Length: 318
Image (tube, rainbow, N blue to C red; front, side):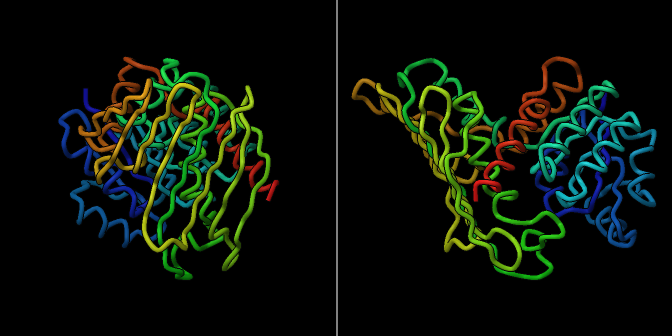
């Protein structure tokens, strides 16, 4: 059976996140796209070989040839159109950040439960074998009792008033676009929700250009995350320190673009493998498995609510 995907938004993220991984499979097809500007949707469809252009968002979510809607819209529109797509009987892959706040997250998850439809948040990095293995190692006890965890994500994003990440009205900002990854990573690795001890935000042009937070997890585990759109170069380091060893990953977000993954325990350091499919290919594989009923969604549901609750708490602390 072929999974038929409709794209809500002619977004820059759609080609690497959905179109490219779908093109490598014979069990997934992109059937339609919709955008606010129909001409833009038509140009996008022609460029990427998508056979149909829906007149608008509403028309796309009601198409009979769409099983799953990919919501690649600005964060400010995620909740509205995810809920509408679910109510139209479609499964949804919603781009991160999930939505604007925890209240919206609860409404989205409730809508999925009412509709009996799949709702997955697109934290692609979490589905790659590097992050799956890291979670496995921490849970195994090899590092002993966890004492500290840190994760960061910095990407230089030049200011442009039309750049969505610099637009407050579109849900822009470093925390929602970049910082959500380190926050999600530390939550996934510890397997619990953090208390936000303190947070600092550097506001520029109406959005947070940089955000840093100190966290505490159950058992007294200390944590820290940070993100910046003002960085001079991209970086995505992560480490977990236990009383018996530590784990270090350089580029946990996109291992396919170069990654170092080492584990030190009992005085010995080893390298963990980082090869394999891209994070987006791993995500598509997971979506297909979930839609076929062969596995449960790893992302969305309580995890998405917990993530947005923590993001709200970081904003409040700052």
